[in-house]
Length: 446
Image (cartoon, rainbow, N blue to C red):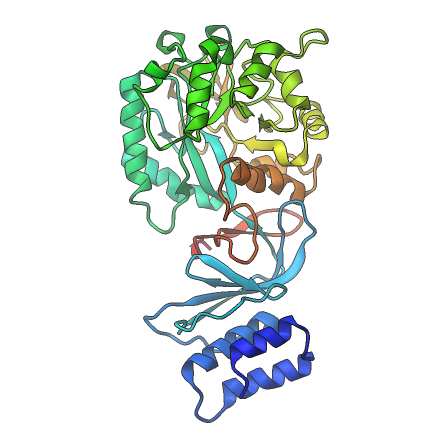
């Protein structure tokens, strides 16, 4: 009898017809005294190729998940009808990209019928201040964990918790809390990638909802007061960074340096880019408007194909025509949708204190007492549905999954292919409602 490994090689080299493959696999499964490992491997391969289920075998040993009858929707690509094999937290293979080998210690097969739903990679939100009453500037570990347990239902499988301007002492406290939660996350929660620090190195002229009394000069000395290996992104006003010393220091350490809450002109921004700055924080918001003789941060970042731009695509912070303008100018690979979600998002409260000021719900946004925007009340799944009139679903996944993964240097996230982490979101076609979510190969919302 042909070993399963040899059979996979023959299938990949197209040396066998489908009838021969079926016959060989059935013989492995139905032989009177089958080798148990061979039988399980044959069942898996048969189901992967032909979308047929076998009886699940209960065991305390390792398990495999076989997702049948779904359409893989990778960012920027056409959807394809494929079955998916997951082992532990990895996509081992699909019906169109067979595994190189089937693990020998699988002793349980869990079948999931996707019922022709779209299956996308998990959404990644790199700029999110909170939700469900969680505020990354003030919440304790339990509130943070509760938030992370609620996010999967929105298809968000990874985030960068975002801390806004605060005292160095409190920033340090909150980093420790977030890190403690990250290090003890249960399997059914959204993952923490690293911390996004929005402040305190900002320009008071464009403070937005930040407290200018807590702003610090962007120096290496001041940064070391809050420095942590958990910081992945930091927003600074580059015009305040003398000789771009802090930008260079952060860039050398692998931290993403982002321009925001800034009055930098084109020349300063360009020099900051040369010093290691690679991103713009929520473009068009908290910076000078685009002017035909003073392009500034907006103009230069739009035409610089190496710069990522964050976009709050809720149609409130930016008019949909401006969103479309950005997406027409920027390369598809350099636009990143963010939620900029605040604690009032999915909260029973109508108001709360955020950044030392009272904020209120106002339709889909949060505003402060003077009426200024404080942030959004949408998660990325709602942002996707909001923009389906502008871009195809597959393209929106570029902005909400693939691009943030690349920006954050997450090599195994952002698409569904062999060898990638099994973070999956199931969507009902046409209405784009989320029905199921897998994180690290585990069903967390079903």
